[in-house]
Amino acid sequence: MSTTPVIEVERLNVHYGDFHAVEDLSFHVLRGELYALLGTNGAGKTSTLETVEGHRTATSGAVRVFGQSPGDRAAVRPRMGIMLQDSGFTPDLTVAESVRLIGTLTRRADSVDRVLDVVDLTRKAGTKVAQLSGGEKRRLDFATAVYGTPELIFLDEPTTGLDIQSRDALWSAVDRMRENGTTVVLTTHYLEEAQQHADRIGLMHRGTLHREGTVAELTRTLPSVIRFSLPTPAPEPPLRAAREGDDRYLVETFGLQKDMHVLLSWAEDHGLELRELEAGPTRLDDVFRAIGDS
Amino acid sequence: MLPIALSELAQIFRNRSVLITSFVMPIAVSAFFIHQHDVFAEIGSLGYIAAIVMFTVCAFGLYASSVTTLAARRQNLFLKRLRSTAAGDAEILTGLVLPVVVIALVQVTAIMAVLAAVTTAPDNVPLLVAAVLATAVMMVGLGLATAGLTNSPEHAQVTTLPVCLGVVAVASWVGISGTEDFTLLKRLLPGGSATELVVNAWNGGVAVTDSLLLLAPTLAWVVVAATLAARLFRWEPRR
Picture 1 (cartoon, rainbow over the protein chains, first blue to last red):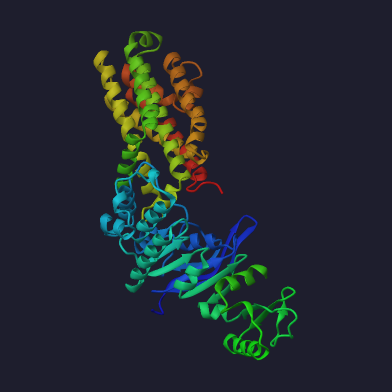
Picture 2: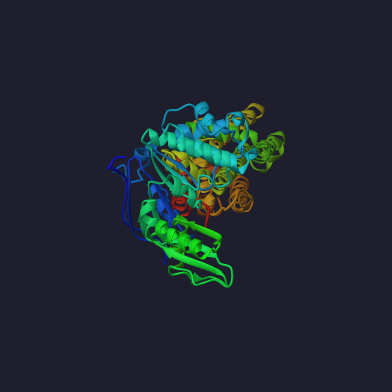
């Protein structure tokens, strides 16, 4: 991954009248990086994304894409593909016609057949958009975004409505593009996808960037959790175990492996069974919940 | 621009209801006027028939179709989709309305050619062409402005009525009664001076320089419509 920023956002503010959707937001995306912009509902993700894409004008602050204003469509758009959150295709055009039209307007060269093959819509090439399912429309949307293999693609909720095979196929296509250096900006409500694919994640909350970093950097700020139940009566367990119910315990720890060893040894020594034992590293959704609760 | 225009053309011919209401109906009405040309020539003149035919096509074909198309493309986010490409705003709008403009101009030309064939030829063809083109530009401008106030294709059936009925009514008023009374009012109303120009171009008997001055109010309406469109036109649905 290069250290050259493809996207630079400095002190961005987006206001709608008195409502401040985005406040003083700064971040950058490096060339070849997959940056996930996540957030609670109403966090300002869409306003941020649309401003970076050039669909919206910033109230104040600076946004540069490839070193240029994203509003300069003729200069910037041939280098970027955008997968919108809503499809935005006309019902009376066929799949192939839709890809050809949007692809031509991107000013990038590619073959409609190739792109339809990538999203497995070759058999639907002559089908009108009105007759596509929701998942097929998302794949069509992805096809127009990757037409001509742009240097930068925006994926706004790319897998919403897709079945598991289509999700896997989409991420395989994204991975292949990334191998060729494509930069990806992702928003999604599927946190496991962000956790699995993102190089860095920006977590937005109430219009600001609450936290930013790799998955490891974000999750290490919260403790891992061990949950278990004990038969009654039972001696008091070791560690700082908080009761969640009469016989249910919760341990929060930054040393999961060590504390698991202590707990299992204690249970072994006392001849106890740790029922319904659950333990795992902190997940992104734990971080997300912590932000939502703050 | 051309790819957008070609895709719009394809959609017009695939959408039967748009094809019938916007393009077949104006031709049917125009055919009626030509068939009954003796009656309408007696009420007004041949120039009046030419004017009413032109406004019928430009209002119900060009104007109403432009508003409906733009509202539909905005409602299903196709405008936003087009703006996610490298195409500029002017290129997008031109591509979207070009087919209906071309179809309307072909219709007006064909209908007037038939009228000339079954009656007498217009006195001043270049002046007639100028009147038709100015009217088409005015109706496109009004279409862009009205599209800003129109939320959906269904809503367009309501929002387009005032202009459609208004310009046809003005064309009838000016075409039948002339502009000797209420001259200024008739010329300043949208379609009034264009009607007088068409009547003069077809019937003759008025100096060309006097007739050319009638282009000014029509072009002023183009400026008004463009200003309104710049203020009112939206690329995305209201949230």
